[in-house]
Length: 215
Image 1 (cartoon, rainbow, N blue to C red):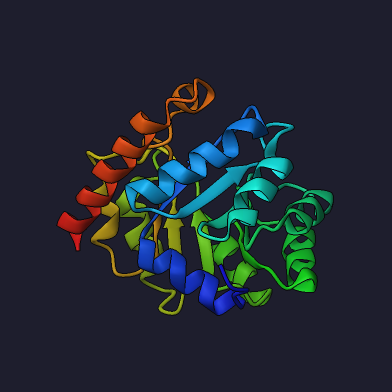
Image 2 (spheres, rainbow, N blue to C red; image 1 turned 120 degrees about the horizontal axis):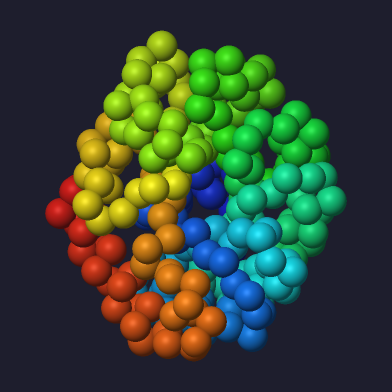
């Protein structure tokens, strides 16, 4: 995959509309998972920094060149550096950290900080960020809260994540301010750890088919 500027990265996330949120316990599974995402028709991933295998997993997946790979659950400047050095094209944080956002900007990588209140959205805008993660969506008011928060912020796009699945995906995608949605149901941690990539690919394909219905 050619080097993308931040606008291109965000545009691709918006094109895919669904971002698989991945937890990898072993970087040895990263290539197989990437292959499953590609085969299923959704060549994008947010690899969370919840395990020690995150950076190496990003490195493996990014090196393939056929998956748009980002880093999730990024909490510190050091994790930003580890993610970008590994080849992450974008960084996602569960909350809004000025230090994390500014480091991403210094490193030239797209950043989606978490924001679930008007004050947090305004803080993101002050930092030059207009696409934010809405997390945890399910316990922060769901689609209705996203719609309400979007109303006064016409130029802001949201990426709701957390508590979203096939049954309520449409509620979020029907909101014009929703840029994309993050979800993990198509990349179950246990299937990935067990190397059952055919099953993962099938789940990804089902998710893509569901997206087509929402288009």
